[in-house]
Length: 302
Image 1 (spheres, rainbow, N blue to C red):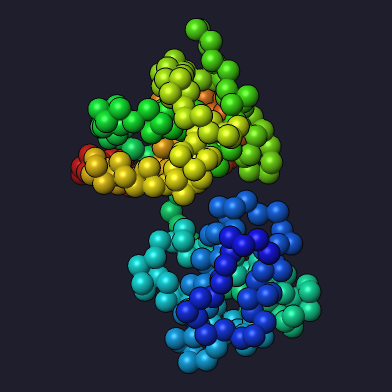
Image 2: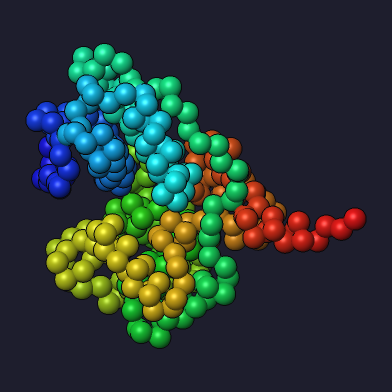
């Protein structure tokens, strides 16, 4: 187990083997660092709830179908988003499937607990005025690194893992064209994406001032390569400065919505840029968001 996992159940009353079992499960799968962190948080949330609800340490052999179903309801009662609840159910299902296959439990208590139904809405991106505010504030502060990161995500639709994994030889910048090759996408699949002019300019400006750090990564700090936590901290900083609430993935959503608006809903091209295997995944961006649905309903009359 890598040292980054630390004590997975710190502060939670668990059985003697649960930590080792979760470690074995995570180490046996090719999860990305981001997915791994999310799964740890999902299992921790369930473990914390279990100990409070049942008044006993959590042991995998003591988890019942009722426990998982009641956890699902408790999460909804606590105001958790449907997507969050469903992700946690999927994590528990995968973990207990592994426990069943390896003989640590006799059944999978999460197998029969259904996910919550969710209305299909477009992923939330930033409005154009908020994007402009974000980019202006980074420019006014002379923050070349943040400006380059924001432009890269807004003009290529890359993920946070693409940003931190980008290496110097992956970037090609010329006067009239440019591209970036992202090699650390989901499923270990790489893709080459064009760099529009604004992204080329801001990225070149950053590269011209990039600190002489011993790293092949494009984005670095004083201590070396920038991590995904570093990118999140940058986003949190500018969220506080601008008053615009957003997370890194919202910039990817913003790109997708804008790309479709400017290119006659060209889903095929967008799927290729975003690295989607199925165009049905990309089609989410053709859905209306909640505000748009509300505006449409307000226009009705009888």
